[in-house]
Image (cartoon, rainbow, N blue to C red; front, top):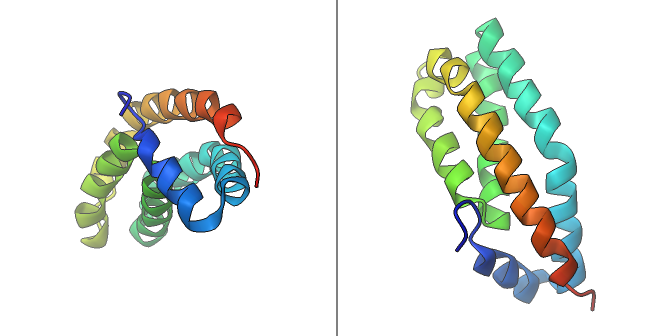
Length: 118
């Protein structure tokens, strides 16, 4: 495991769905990550706990699938407050999440060339 990525998760995903599909999923995750974080920021700043919860859950699940466990853990910590209607913790976590997402994306992108299509 790297600081932000559990590489074994990519291998497990590849075993389940094939290396090509796993690589495609990981690339799509990287494409969507900035927009999903921006959506979380907008929802938290607007006080829209329902939308922030949905975006957080989506990010959490996809992060777990690619092995971005550190980011997933941070997102998991936001679910309870968001479920309770509190967007303050999510708004306060934005900078930390953005930095972590950047490191995660860079690390994941470095591992994608090693995944071979079937």
